Length: 238
Ligand code: UDP
Image (cartoon, helix red, strand yellow):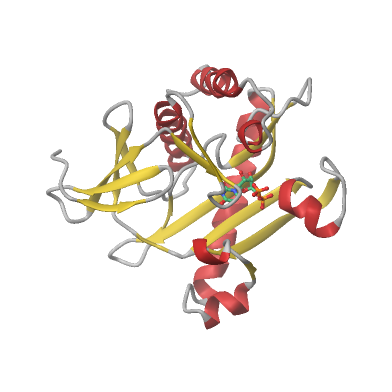
C-alpha cells in the first residue's frame, strides 16, 4: 500500500491517501494533548501502543459484529482503514461518574450510576467541543435522528463488549469516547481509536488510574502504565 498525500492532521494522528480512494492510512503520533490543547507533550512510543491497542480492540469488536473502519495494522504506527466521513460528534459513554461529569453534576468520582449515560459533544476545537444533545446535532446538520439512534445502539453494544473484555484484564471501564463515520454506501462504521487515551480504566483491585488521567493530572508512571495496558490487552488478543 503506497502512502499518498496527507489529507488531515489531528492532535494524535495523521491521515494519508492511498492508491485506493476508499482506503486511508492512519499514522499514530506520540503527541498528547489535554485540556483542549492547553497541555501538550510527547509520550514515548504512545503512537505504537495506541496503534496496537486500537487494532486489537477493533478486531475484537468486528468479531462481535460491530462494523468498523479498521482493515489492517500495517506497521508499528500505521493502520489501513476504510475511508469515512466522520460525524462531527464525540460520543461519550459513562458507566461510573468521573471527569467532566463529576464536575458538571457535583458528584464525587467513582459514584455508581444505575444506568448507562450516553453523551454527545460537537467536535469544534475553537469552542472546546461543547456538550450538545440530539436536537442540536440535527439542527447543526451533524447527524439525522435515525443516524443518532443507530449510533447510540452501536455505542451501547460496544460498551457491553468492552466492559466484559476489560474486566478479564482486571480493569474497570469507567467511561470512554467513540467517533463514528459514514462510508460511501452510507454505512455507519466505528472509526478513530479506542485506547487508554480515550477510555478511563481503573484497576479493579487497586483502583489505580490506568489511563490518560495520569497525563492530564500529572500522576506519574505514564509510560509504564501505557505499556502495562498494552501487555494486558496482548495477553488476551493478537
Ligand atoms: N474523551 C476523549 N477525548 C475527548 C474528550 C473525552 O477521549 O476529547 C474521553 C476521556 O478519555 C474519558 C471520556 O471520554 O474516557 C469522558 O471524558 P470527560 O467528558 O469526562 O472529559 P475529560 O475529563 O476526559 O476531558
